[in-house]
Image 1 (tube, rainbow, N blue to C red):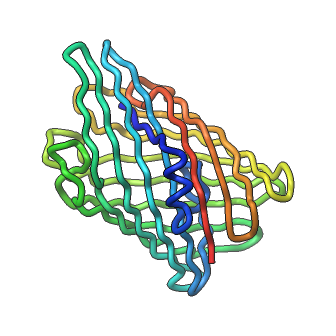
Image 2: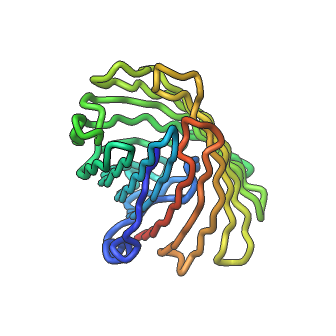
Length: 252
């Protein structure tokens, strides 16, 4: 399926007040903000998929707020808004609205010699309209193991996760995720990033698991402000064919 986030001007307009961590990467890093520090992210994505004569475009703007409860623990709140357009032989349908909100805690429990390990449990609340396809209609939960290794100018991240996909539809409920990402410092302010990952899909009619390959750039305008862009390519039929990602990140 696909997700499309255009309206770049709108993204820049909203960015004055929000943003998230190593976007455009899907894989999280083990870093935390530090006690009393905030991070605001505004991320947008535009997805396109074409399968069996049906085209689907999905746009999403995600606002993520992170607060450092302790030097080694963050609280993370995610609030996405979606636009979905599906076109087939019978016409075009459109839906839009607030999707399910998420709450996570990230705890970095180990840090030594450039290696950091973290755990990130979380829940998602059914704030989206499941009848419009904007949410699951039920509370879901998840837990992730995160590892980060710094080898200047490289940095590597590993994520292993489990989702309990509670929903009102007849879809798979026990899902998993595995992904690996790397960052390379091109200049003092510019990083190149790459990401590959796979997870168990929730569609009970197929054994094809969504898998992706992603590349992008992160430019640090200052220590407190990043701009990023990326492209994600679907490696399997169950993953969106093409996704464009853009983001803004503020730290204070």
